[in-house]
Image 1: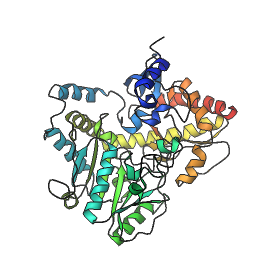
Image 2 (image 1 turned 120 degrees about the vertical axis):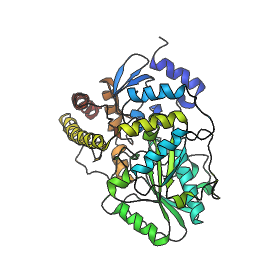
Image 3 (image 1 turned 180 degrees about the vertical axis):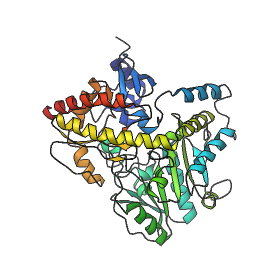
Image 4 (image 1 turned 60 degrees about the horizontal axis):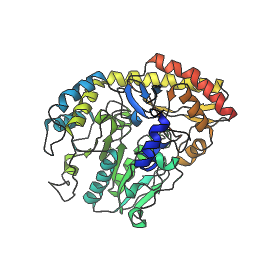
Length: 425
């Protein structure tokens, strides 16, 4: 058969390194052959063999409304007839920026880019340019995209590949990057330009900030004149209606966004106060540019998603996820394993263990649970039962607004059976 996952992966490996365009898709940490998706609808995706999966990847959080939401599709059908890219200002980029600024307290201006990696890279450059300082602080296990200075001690695919960083990154590129343990407020000095943090760490599975951590970062940055950067590529407009600032009541100097604001299309953004953003070209000396920045299709889709994601829908999704997490823990327990399912708003993690454990508060603790070997068997057993989780223990579960109570309920039997399989593997 040529229309199989194996056949497509074999073809891919001939023309794409490793057969994938992002390492986390490769199944390297769980083994086996990736399924090749041909379509998605709501909470489900379908592969080339016609197998339908209840999907908890949801493009790693980008699909807040689920796949191929009718309103988003209709918006894109209309937008594409007007043109796909112009390299010129468009109304759509203004409208999306206005929606973002209106939601988030303290966010006065945004610059749209094409990816989360680009957003974070640009925010760091802006912070250095605005402060006249070189050094930045990041936290172990937090993933901020694949720009050179930020790949050190990263989570997500970097951790899943068992890498401390990346070949090709020079010592000079990371010389000004200081790595600190998550949930510990570092002592800064006047050489630090910025502290970069995921408000909820979602690339070492899910690790929530302990009480006082984000507030402590804000205070320490203020003490030495450093900037606080929230990497909200995952949490932005998914953790809450206005993201982490609303959820935690801590205001950064710079925000980085992605995923949700593109409605399923490639997009990113970074922003802050009007004064700080005035350092960007063409107004200031910090250069940043992009031919496809503010792409009209991405901005149209993103604006549609934000319009449909009302405050009440975030409340309902958070409640649904909280119930599901408790039920999933019980289901895994009935299969003979211990599960930890930490929740922050609609974000949900899943750690597996053989013995009782506590929810991790940093990367070292998360790594013990992620690397215990249980997830591999559990993942494949769930996939065989029609439930698609991310192919790596360092990722979280993304429950979209398209996941119904019935969808979540049908996961529970599969989870109990998968836990029993993993326990005996």
